[in-house]
Image: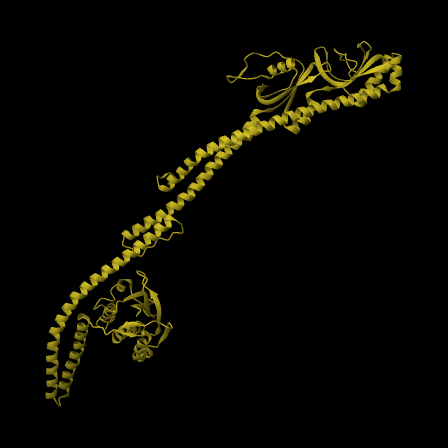
Length: 578
């Protein structure tokens, strides 16, 4: 798979992931600590709040029991039955009140605290403190215990205590289910100090058991909050609070706890896993984006270098990135541009060497040919005079003279190309030279049904040129365009100000655009070579001479062409500056 290849992109991705892993772990540790501390604070607050709700609920039970006791004391029937010690009537009345008032326990004692009447079958083991109205007592019979929250109200007759009414509700775990659901805690009740094993362990680690903590509560009579309590084979954050009787003894212990497994693993553990996953994912995404922003341009550089190695100097690297990579791409493109210029200069040097050698050869050959041609022409003229009246022979000598003239023109072209041409440079406007050339070719243009469109820039600067030589250049270019459009077409001639890409020098640009047959890619590099032509007629020297004239004017001539669509010849010459 490409993801596991040891390329720069994958290396950068893994580097970002490794670099991100350390701060992720550190930040995760810090976050875990902060969350754990905050979570423990919330748990402690929640357990204390739940304990307060339990205390409030027990207070409400005592208040309700006190209200029922007051109702009983104010009941005339009950008081008459109590005076008469009518046990049947009292028990009947107590059972009725217990059912209607939904109270768990109703007891009546004599002045000594001995049980006289009861609505239930469980008798009290402690019925003292007659001066205390509210009480929390543990009732027991047949080893069955239950904690009662209620009141002990005195029965008075002529300002003398003759008995006591005990009314109360059973304090049991089930009545706190609403608090468990609301606060998300576990609640348990304990009625005695249990025995606990010493050195209790869980998975080899010493733990504080609930039994040990309850024993401590029974001994001290104060609440204890612990961060790790072992209860029912589970670990809890928990609060153990004593339930005090009126005589300040511990009647029971209520335990309020939250499982550590739920509290930490759910709240912190899941957050830790999510945080690490998101951190690694984020670092991987950032790594991929940054790696691609680097590796993608590098791939373009690789393709560009390979293209240059194949000799394609027209290749350009286009990158949207910024900074050093963009600068590198610009430097690479500039290097390719310089290589193109060097190649062009090299080709020009080779071309000039070839042309120089060819020029010397052409001059020698032309000189050797011209002398015999003069003799042949003169001889043909003498023979023509002797064949006066002999039309057939006269016609033959005329053919010789015409062909000799044609050959002489070819030889003259050779010499014009070969010998150094002297330019009579003068300050001239370019547009009038083009207009004069168009007037000379107007007949040929009309004959081929060619439309000419001139677009000359206004206030075009002047140039130092040889008027006749520039006329010759434009003539060759226009005739070349006419020859490319035998069935008619459009010739656009434009002048404008341009700049040299190499040094920024201002130039005059004259372009000739035709809609003719165009030039093939194989032939486009040869059009300025001497004796190269794609036409059945001609010497192939017209464009070569034009190229040489433009070079003598310190200018350049370029060609763009698409076969079947036409060609553009552009001439660039320096602007005259005084």
